[in-house]
Structures are given as structure tokens and as C-alpha cells.
Length: 636
Image (cartoon, helix red, strand yellow):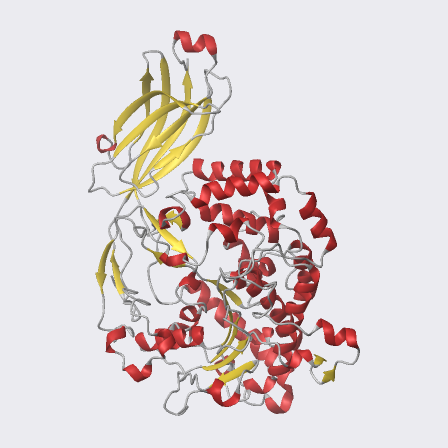
């Protein structure tokens, strides 16, 4: 290779491959046999299978009651020419209960020459004839870019975004305080982070984004990184057709209505039928399906029910001219061969089907109340709830599939299947990767000193597995710092919002941030020292600032403004500097987040009545405005 990536940790050896194209033209005289044809006319479709390819199985659509189907469907397979590649063609009959195999044929792809294109007939049961058009060619250019360097599209985005930020910062800071902004090189790279925490994180992040949008801080950010619940809000915001012209305030009103209904209403027979059809369509296209797909459909139906076909690539229109911060979504690759619930040990069947939505198993099992009368009526009138609960409990309680990563983790095709990987250390900034054992004991806080936390974090993907498993990144630690700490992104200022669950409202709020610090140290990445004893000295605050001790020496070390979920000044003020006066104003703000016995803000609560939504939304909105100031840019 002529190009050397200085950030590379693992290098892919480039090998040429073949593209094998199959066009299923049609078939004549499809039969189920003399006796079978008397009972039913075939509903034929064709399955193509090449065991040595990444996306090994493909199929055509089926035709009802058609013995002479014409498909004209095209399929492509990427082949390793060094393997023995064989195409297996199966003629199938679609049925309601179980599809029937009508015949199978084999075609050795090695019998074709590169550049050759031909029609090949196949005969099934001495009667049915099928015609396939096949061609074989060399792939002329690579389809996969495997590099730790930023892609060209992100580099172009950063340049456009910096131009916009420069003008936005001049407006925000005023002429006097923006005199140093001569060029885009003077523009700091600001990243906004949102943690996981289910709907609590999503609703909390909605208030944060409204505050950042109205204060002008959002216009000065380059990245927004999310994890779990915060990504649900990011998806809701960025998939909205009117964003950014329509701000978070109006979009949040729509979100409040969406999450006020009981989630069991998503499990009516009509909707379940639609989910099954969608999952079957995905499976039929060759994509793997797991429980994560079902859960994702329920979340999507709740939040973006009319935008369920939105893809990540379709969000490019929100950033193609640098008009919005680049959204970064987080997931974690895991190994499938772990039977115990290590990666989601706190999630039980009870949390999925019962009325109890508390984070603790010790909480009362009594049904929770709601202030939303409409949602309450829907819940009481939902005569499907009981059988839905029994169905889901039967599915998740005793199923071995649900109790393994194979069943619970998301599953996707392994994009690195068949690649040859070599480790590259000499020029990589990660060459000094430090194991947990080599860190000094005084560098680690007791809360983050578990021995297996980041075990084998740099182990490459298994290039022999056809599929990989991905899970919620919050199961490692609940803030998406790895995305922002990539040295290529050169982030100067990190504004992080932690919505993670804590034992009580008065508990120390730094566990996830300390994990991020530990991860950075293990990777030799600059990170300000997190002093957990600031909590003992100063008590619980809404916001903490962590800066490098020696800025002249630690030039690449970011400053962190860390917001925690706490109801302190919001109890006294309805807006920054505006005290609450009436009893009603005081009562609406007098609530706990983690100490409330009703647990309205639990990670496992998927219904937010209007009052609960407004309380949490307005709290994070207030905390953000009350603690963030344009002066944060003066030293960057």
C-alpha cells in the first residue's frame, strides 16, 4: 500500500475478490408432484446459497398460485477466489406454516471464467426448468475502508462546520471577545455528550438540547455523541423533517405526547402482525433477527412511528453543509459465547412485562400511578395486557435463547469476514496501550477497579465468524467518551451530561466519569484528572469543571464541563435568577429523581405522563442554562 495510516492499530491485507452476479430469470412448469398439484397450486420462490460468502443466503419474492413465474431479480455475491465456491439453488413453495422444498441443484462457480456471462438452465423433478443468468468479474476497487484516520467526508464536514462556528461564535461572544477568531484554526472543537439511562436519559437530553439550542451553544458544537437513551433523543431530533429549522422546543412537545401512552398499547394484535411482517421481511432479505430487533421496533414505534424507515445515511442532509453538529451513535461489539447475563445482568423479565419500573428489585411491586388521565384510561381499558404479559413472560423467562448473547444482543453481518489482519504498532498513538494491571493503584478509584472492565478491549474482530454481536455501550461504561477522545478529532472542550442511575439523589455522581478517565489512561489519551473528593469538599452540584493541571504542558488535554442529574437550585428558581413565588410553582419543582419511592424516572420506565416529562425536561433545561456561560469559550 502506498498510503500509511499513522493512527492504524490493525492493518487489513488487501486481496482482490470476485463479484458473482446471478439473475433469476424465471421457471416453467413448477410442480409439487401429481398428488401435490391436485391439492394446491405452488407458490414458488428461489433461494440462493453460497456457504463461503459473507451474505451467504438470498431469496426471490414468491408468487401465489403461479407455475410459470418470471422473477427477473438480480443478486450479487462477493467471492474469495482462493476458496471452493459452490452455488446451491433451491426451488421452494411458500406456505403459511412451513415452506416446502421442491428441488435443489448445485453449480460449481469455478467452472466459470472471469469476464464470462451466460445463461444456465436447471431442471427439477424432471419437469420444472429454471433459467439463471450468471456473470463473474474481478472487483476493481475496495468496498471497505478500514482505518482509524477520519474519512474524507468527516474532514470535509469539519471544515464546513468550522466556518459556520466561527461566524456563530462571533455573534455569541460579541466583537470584543471574538477578536482572536481570525481563521478556522482559531475555532475550538466542542463536543456534547449524552449518557445512557433509558427514557430518563432521553427526556433529560431533550431539555438539555433545548437549552443549548436557545443559548447558541449548540451552534458552536462540532460533535454530539450519544449512548442508549440519549441516542434515542438524537434519532428523534435528527430524523425530524423540520429540524433544524424547527427547534427542540416544538419537537419536544411531540415527544412528550409520544411517551405518555402505556407501552402495552404497542402490543395489540394488529401491531404485532405488522411487527412480524417487518421482521420476516428483514429475515427474508438475509439479515439476522434477534430480540433486539423487537425491542428496537417498540422503541421506534413509540418515538418515530411515522419515520421508521429512516436510516443513518439519510441523516447526511442535516450535516452536509455543516449546518448541525455531527451526531455520533455508540454500540459495543461483544462475543456471543457467554451464557450468563453478564452484559445485561440487571434486566429481568419482570422489568419488561410488569407495572414495576424501578431500578431496584427491592422496590414495591404495586402498580405505579400516573398523572396522565388519558394514558391511565388506555391502560385500564387495554384488554390485551394480560395475554401480552403472559406471552412475553413465557418467551423471556424460560427461553435459553433470551438468556444468552446469541438471543439478546443485536446481530449484524461481519463486515470483516475473510479479511487478513496484521497488528501495527510502530506509528500508532495506541502503541503504548496500558493494561489495567500496569496502572498505578493510586491512579484508580475503588469504584472503577473491577478486574475485567476493559479486558481484551483491543482484540480484533474474529474474521471467521459470519455475524457479530453488538450491545448497548452503556454496559461497559455509560458515557460515550471513546468516540470523542479519538486523537484524530482533536476535541478541546467536552460538555457531558450524565443521566446514569445512582443509589440515591445524594450519592457521588462520578462513577461513569471515572471509568472514562481510566479508559483514557489505559489508552494513553489526554484526560484531565478527575478528583472524586470534590464531592466531599463541595457537596452535590449541578455542574463540575475539570481542567488540565498544566495547560502549557498538556496542550492536547480537553476541558470537561460535567453535568449531573440533580435537583438543587431548580426547587427555588423557575428560571436562572427568577425565584419561585406561588405554592404551585414550588410544589411542581419539589421532587426527587432517585429517592422517589414511586420511581417515575427509573431506567425501566417506558411511560412518562406529562407531569413527569415536564419535570425532568424543565429540570435539565434549567440546570443547563443556570451553569453554562459563553465564557467557556474565552480560553479556547
